[in-house]
Image 1: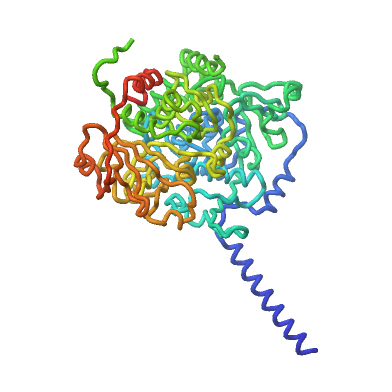
Image 2: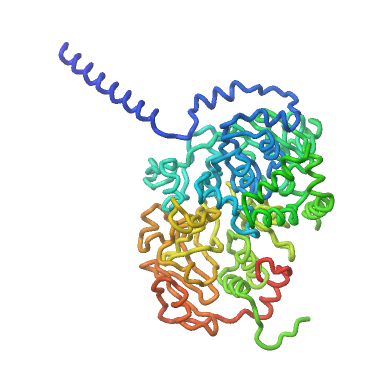
Length: 349
Length: 259
């Protein structure tokens, strides 16, 4: 009996050692996925009361720390939270990791202003009609900054996994391509335990802060989005903190009249800033289309000498204006009127 | 009224749009990129495929394009005009994975003999000569459904091996796509200003199926940087007709995508 007992103990000890070794191996594995315990602790620590969160732009960007992972809402030139990008750059934030579904001019400016050296996205240039961004090219080709490329659906599934509180999402995309090779062991594959098929496992993204621009929300942060939603709802659910800019603040009574229109619940939101034309010169669905002449001018300035052009743009539109109203004045009334006229045309029928 | 006399003249982009539109089938669900793909899908809708549905990556199901208001990307409000539904980006892309999409349709910067597309790097990815904008949804669309690509036929674009596989075609030919885990879809047709190209059933290499009127075999060979296969019964495509060109010009009066 004794000898059998000691043999059992021996096996038990060996198993324990193996488990400990495996645990150590796992803990040293490089992973961008936030441990679930941290995710829950951070969420539990947030003030989720129904409270007012209205503040100024400058206060809102104060919620962002150097080194944070900041996710930007909207897509390409749509509902980009430009006012927050503007305030981030003016506040000279440093070493931010930026992520977005598709990145446009705001990515150029975050590189040139020295706010970020690392952008995670699926596509990065001002827009098809203006060709390949020379600013993005300068930074990536000279290895001054990283453009980490994931497929668009993978970006979406990464935010969604983050929003769902799970470490990864299985996917049938990206496998077999060099996009997968390029991200290295950040993208793992596995044989499905149910069907034995090979699937990709895209890792969750839980940004430190999500910046989202909406058409309207109340003072608590209940937000309504018109038109295309992009990845914004998942962004709000995945992030540790959410800063909303809104074209206008409406009453909670108005929200409660149409709760089916609310897309982002107040308890995910940490700050609400009312910023009319807060996505200009990009578009905001139903209100204004992109400011095309202005964006042509940006492409022209950055087309000849990308860095000097972008710096000139930053000086004139980001650093010189004393406030958002002055920024809009610089964009010009004629452009605002034309963009608004086109914006409202989506409701013509 | 435009006089319908003589042979119509057209630009390269118009030729691509017309030839690509004829590859659509009525009732299909088509995931379309901006530019020639969107014009081609809309042209098909307005000529012979009224039940064709367009999906946009930005999150739109079934829009009708307003003439003269072509969207600058798949993500602006113009993409939603008279649509049946708007939905989040991730969910519209997941329709590909679920299998609701018949054809993905986009342009390309560089393609190889196996139909792999590169829109990420020209040159060595670790020291690229040019950093391109990347995949967007291109990788997802080409991983999950059958593809039509429309592009100009030039030697520097039709290469033996792409510098970087952004959007997978038949990978290295034969069974390699299936073996890499991509069980569905694959490159179906490449439409150029010279020819309509398919892929050999077994080798999964580019094979010319039809030449456009007036195009010689040698022109295709001279503008392709690898030995391209030719089908046994090579066809000649029908020229774009007056009606097809009229529809295109009505859709894009400013010649944003058809100049």
